[in-house]
Image 1 (cartoon, helix red, strand yellow):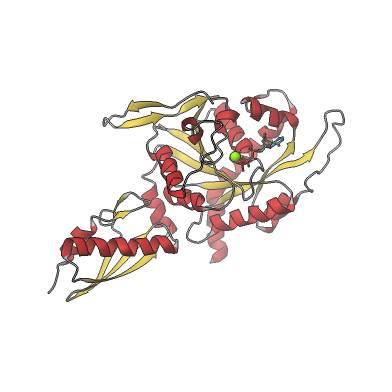
Image 2 (cartoon, helix red, strand yellow):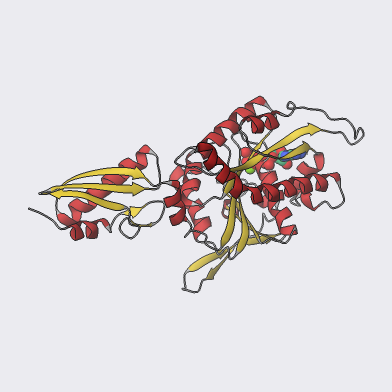
Length: 366
Ligand SMILES: Nc1ncnc2c1ncn2[C@@H]1O[C@H](COP(=O)(O)OP(=O)(O)OP(=O)(O)O)[C@@H](O)[C@H]1O
Ligand SMILES: [Mg+2]
């Protein structure tokens, strides 16, 4: 008994690469190593480096071959991860109209990711860029409140192929999407991971983002499944890490950085942001109180040879602005606006330097 390579490839057209959403053959991810009698030996590449994803792919390949060609075939599949470059090439087909996708992450919760990402998005829009903001915090979406769009809903329209797509909500010149638009504000969202991932992918693929200079992704805290899913399905250009100077926050920031720097993930860290760096009471403008410790994030940045993009003090009006939904970067002529201005200037500078830094890293390794 024997089978042609064409028949094997035909059978494998039924297997989808789960992250890249196309079949293995179209994506050219299958190599037939040998076919001897009823023994088929294959190599298949997958985007997700996790063990369980590889196991699942092995099962899917076996299932497809048995179903199409018959149960008598013995299938041996070696599953290897796509390299960062190969994956980027494929992922570029996702969100092709977006020039730069920047994620804002931290390890610990409540350190100011949403505050930083909302103000970054609105601040960039104020500078004339076309900006989108995607709240990926499926379990605790805060964007609708912070951008005062709680009562709005994305509109459903037909795209040029007649398919239904969503149009993001607009706030302060930024195109905004959040899972919060689809859930009741007071309802605790208790979803299984797979549902959360599906909702996230819909906000990327079924939304008409149009042409954007920046898409800012506000990530949930931690380094969980949803993060893995994001790095595999969205072609991130860089990540900004937010931390407070507190030891527990820094330890978690370190874990977050380590995750993005894993060889299989390999997303450049644009820099660190120290939030709640100090507190200055309005009546004592020259005093700085280091409530959460002093310069911890700067030290971490130095140690890891990463830029420190901003030091944002703890300011009451930053919190109030978040609560009323008018980002503090819009408070013209104030100390707060000046703080964001410095941050934005550094952000743009580090972004310009990033391609050179990547080359430098390669040189260092060589
Ligand atoms: N520099 C600051 N000054 C004053 N208040 C701040 C500052 N940064 C953040 N806050 C406030 O701290 C709270 C937590 O901030 P935020 O929601 O941005 O954190 P987060 O990291 O996104 O949290 P989560 O992990 O829950 O997503 C908010 O009420 C916010 O307004
Ligand atoms: Mg948040």
